[in-house]
Length: 522
Image 1: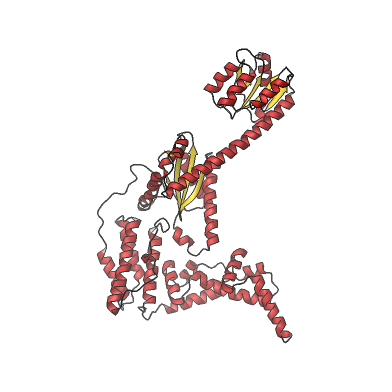
Image 2: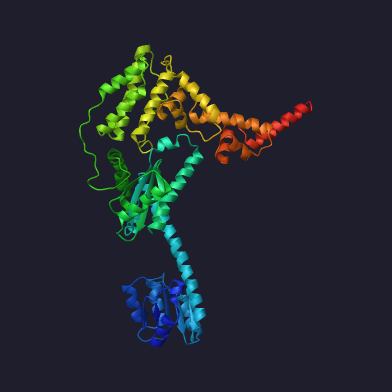
């Protein structure tokens, strides 16, 4: 804003300088301090005031005093034709950034305004970061069921929070074979994707954090109460398609105040069951997004058939029955929580039945469904079925219920196939196709017969070959990693160290040292 009682100076400062080149807009002019005060009171978005000192009604120092006491964030540059040290002293005490003499050197003025603009941007960025940090802490505190202080709620009551959550589909299945570092990297890229879309594409301020293992809570914050939700939904879905991400998205139906976040977060989480039942990738919360509380008959017949199959001498494939069980869950619209309850009951009854048969006391079994199942981690019927299939296979194997199995030759064929192709980017489903069984059943059967997961078995072969190459060839370690089938050097080193308790470099040095000692008679 430019304030001067000489119109020609106001007009000159406004029109002779191309302010837009410096990302600066002249939002208003005034002929004295009083007009300037009225403008600032009605349009409180002024960042910089350039003002003369000598003006009628209210001079520049009085204006500076008003701004200093009421709008301390506004920067002031005073221009005067009076080279008076006393004015300069008063101006500095009132927070005036610069004191220029007429006639004004335009380049000097522009430089000073540009410098102040840079300072303002830096301060705004710091303030926004501080606000973001404080809001994030308050939201995390509520998610952890810790009450907020009343004064904190009042301090930020004008800030509106728009929350939404994202979940990785089939998370439990996707991360089971990943190392901790790989899981953390997956989450980092996931959070970065969400925040870049919100901040760069949609131009909203936001922060995110993992409220639970597989729930990323993102909060848009603003002092306004409007947001184009559909635009946000469309942008996220478009980017998901481009990046080939498999995320479930649950959006709020509006802004909330900072003190209401715990209740809103609970509603967002509860919508997951509705999404799964409706087979949807994203929803916006509304009064219609509820699960009908209809009677769902417990699958007693399927439960009985499954338990009888496990304890009988028939060579039935129990996975066919678990397929039928989960088809029943889907057809009858069982929620994920209800499906977990049924599976847990089946596993519990199997143990009770076994104990009654062998007349032994209580036994502990390390089974999936004897531990709490987090439906946000295992967030699909398919992954819940895999957990049940694993439990049944483990139950049969560990309790000596395993019968003479004609499937042994399948595993032998699988091993031959793996031995032939383990140096390539071999996958479990590829081997399953080669031996003509389903991928899920192959994984269960392979673990049952070999005592190792498919990944661990392949890695054993690769590390064994890598040790030979390290000892007998001059190939570089990165070359050896690719030769034996590892796509990423870092992962190769991690697996090698897990198997041998040393890095490939350390192994090569140790082997060379041992060979040298043998030759020297050491």
